[in-house]
Length: 287
Image (cartoon, rainbow, N blue to C red; front, top):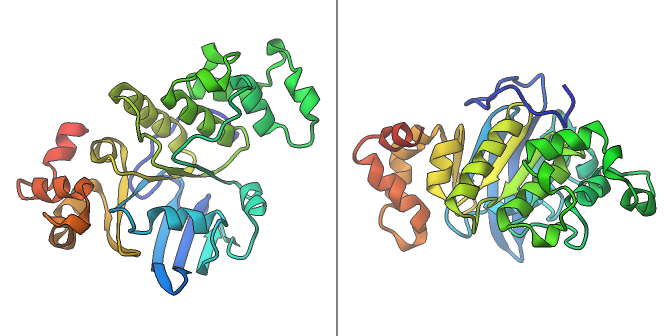
């Protein structure tokens, strides 16, 4: 199946393909800014088909890890995509290896249509004039599939600037899909979304996550509980805990660090409180 086709596999804890397929392996990752260690000796193994959420308070190092993986900051340690070392490579080289990311504010060409945005994202080697003049009837199969996957097929000729907030995020994800990104790093994709948009986004992540490595930095704990297959909890630039939603909720270290502390962040207080009533109560309720 090509990278642009809708996945028929559901994401599962631990992934569904193993190390013989696409994966992202982080070992001893550290990032320092002017003597301050923002990320310290982080190890992560992220497999295809495992919808991994990174959670933790502001300043825990979540976005810095994504910046390091995509080459926006210089780390020490090792970051390998399916055995290929990423540390030391430039941003565009990492993108060409199939590692894509989104930002908290969607980066789309607002004056251009949804279709034109996707066409430009997929159009390496073609002139901008050719891409902008493409008629709807000539939509390549891969782009048509992505339009359906992200649910914007009926808005393909709509300027991206007038899309709803959630739709812009879906378009940005679509722009990564048409580039055949096999590792997607999404920075707070549901921030500012309505409840309905969050549900649609979660379902989109499930559709694309079965055959890709998808990592989500998120503060919305309801969203995390509903859609994560595994969770990494970060604190002060280090991995505090890792496992399923239920395992993280029940973890004594998570409860000790985050329960009722201002430094812990509101997004984890609820986890610790719920753990006192049973580690699986919220996941059973949310699915």
